Length: 95
Image (cartoon, rainbow, N blue to C red; front, side, top):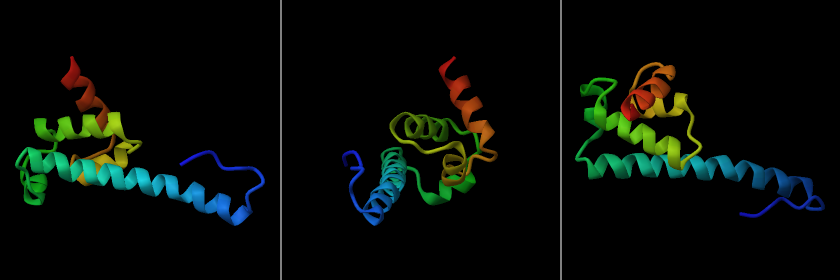
């Protein structure tokens, strides 16, 4: 995906701008399910394990590093509680 040309029709510029977040969201969703599979975790584990489980923190750390996913999206996808916990858990895991 390149830069949006200024002389492109307005409709085209809007479509390209809308496509970027969708692509990033898909990348985050794919990365999340891929990592869960590698770790042998299922959707049921998201609710059964504690909100700050080490494996959840590792996935959250990778999502933050490789995507533009924000804390609210990560917290919801991994069932980690309040979004502000994501930053704290990631910071604690690297100390």
